[in-house]
Amino acid sequence: MKYVLGRLGQAAAVLLAAFTVAFVLLQAMPGDALMIKFENPELGLSPDQIAALRVAYGADTPLPIQYVHTLLGFLGGDFGYSIQSGTPVKQLLAEVVPGTLLLASLGFVAAVLLAVGITILANLPGLRKIADVFRALPSLFVAVPVFWLGIVLIQVFSFQLRLIPVVNPGPVEGLILPVLTLAVPISAPLAQILIRSVDDVLGYPFVAVVRARGADPWWILSKNVARNAVLPAFTMAGVLFGELIGGAVVTETVFGRAGVGRLTEQAVSQQDTPILLAVVLLSATVFVVINLVVDLLYPILDPRLSTRTRGGARLARERKVVAV
Image 1 (cartoon, rainbow, N blue to C red):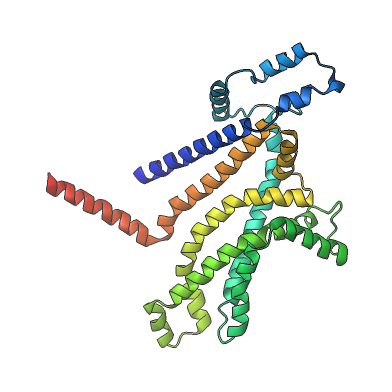
Image 2: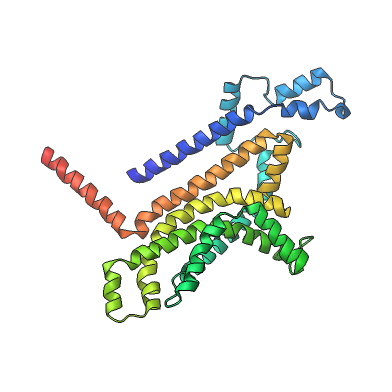
């Protein structure tokens, strides 16, 4: 319980820091979103009416008061209102978050499958030259920009091969290229960790013992090596899933999908700070929650950690008794 409470406290501190930094940076942006919107001559608003709108949005109060008011609103689930549309930010997020979460989840599953496939092909028994080619793929995937990969996939599969329509695609067809665009760069670090972990486990003494007993290389890889090699990749998978929200923003912009990416793009162009602050905190929350879950599950998945924890606690109790 002490460990869990400590991790929860760290997660809360990270979220508070993310909110504070985002609030300060957004307030430091040049220009005034309220003035940009309401000083439009087509609206025909007088200076007094504009001043009244600034009071209604709380823009005339000092920054510390705005910070406290905004923080209390976020803690209560009130993200404020969009400056451009006047719609509650919570409502805007509720409309676009499910699509982004679907894209991120499918991209994560595809990235895991791709990383596992690369790892298996990189350890092909007796085919060292082919295995070396697959070992070099993660380094190539890491260097591929997401927006460039999306454009290339559209050019090849939509314009050249005409396999997947880019204009008015179906619900399934519209996910194929965005998921692939999201999965390729994310799979690279995961595959690197898996390949390195497999190489390390293959050097353990128990693997030599199993091999000396005449076990098949595929049996050793699937039954003895995989279980021990997957634990380091588990932590990396949690970090990568937290980063998928940011990658989904770029991917949705490239493919014109309605989601958090499109909403963020519009908010940036219009300096709609309430939406931007909510998106930043949403991304930070997803990242922190996923990594918190990984931290809490890791001792369960690795018995050695739970044994060390229990042994350390027992040793501390014994030392306390002796001291008394």
